[in-house]
Image (cartoon, rainbow, N blue to C red; front, side, top):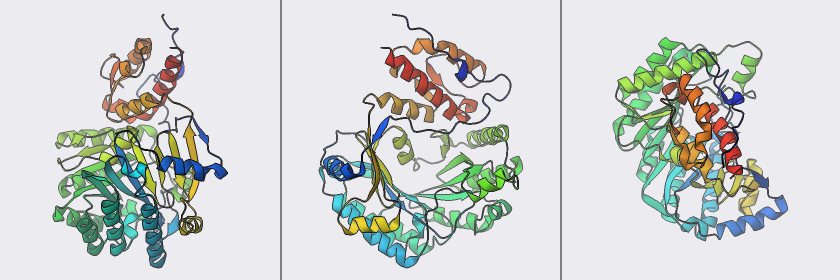
Length: 438
């Protein structure tokens, strides 16, 4: 039976040089129902006693402390305090110990561990080592498990770095954002550009782990010249990988409020697109390989495994205040309030802030779509038996420079990869509609 053609008008690219007015925010897609608070403990106990089928698995640990609050950041939770951090580490280790022997946590290998925040590198050297050592001793980490420590230049001294390496960390991801001293100052970064460069060079010289950094484009005061200088610095340092991210302007941040009040201006969507394409060209010309839409590798040491697997829907076990995880259609967030977190751990219970259960049993195609978009190649035939219905839209996207051809194996150009979130949201809506008509 031939299906009626959907209305593609809202999904068409605009005529002219800018296909969309702005990048669409990535919205949660899975239909889920909140589990009432009084039922969460029972639901959690049932989940941790579940043996999961063999599939890729991850661990995420949240370290909710920062020494300073950067003007662009929406992830700030708690100001760094050494005594508080030691207490937090003790609680985090107890949380891991409470769950480590469960059927859920022991049922399959863990392929990547990610320390996020906040600023994980703010923890004391001994505390970083204690956490990494406990994970390796108590959880079934795969022999080639990627263990990433996210950090920043401030306070990430030799003692902390060596403690991480000696305990088993094999990847560092450093939030540099820019090496331009003037722009760093505007963003409330405490170290200047030369100091940031020296730090990254020292990390690379150890040659004991993959070293990557984040660069942001679309920052206030940034132009193509300063962006080119940042890219050249990354090349010259000899990093294993780099992320090139567009500034995500959040309204609740200091920078977001300044832009809203017109005290600061930031580059337009068209200018951000130009920065992105400039970054693509630079990476290609210098022999770096694309791992995803926003990540490039220079060496075989860099895999970017956690970020790729999370997009593919891998199970994620989460620990720490503010950490979020998902397994078997269940998602949860650990209590963000530190006092509530400490109280829950003291009581011997998982301090859940929220927990949901998916109402959508056929969601694997969504993971496959998201994973494909992330690497610029989506075989639509594997997501819906009605992919040919999408041909008019695919033709229009191709004519707008977003894809290489009109095939139902969608292959994105660099232009298309910049607008990937727009294309993803359109395809999610349309494939859901098509599959509902089967």
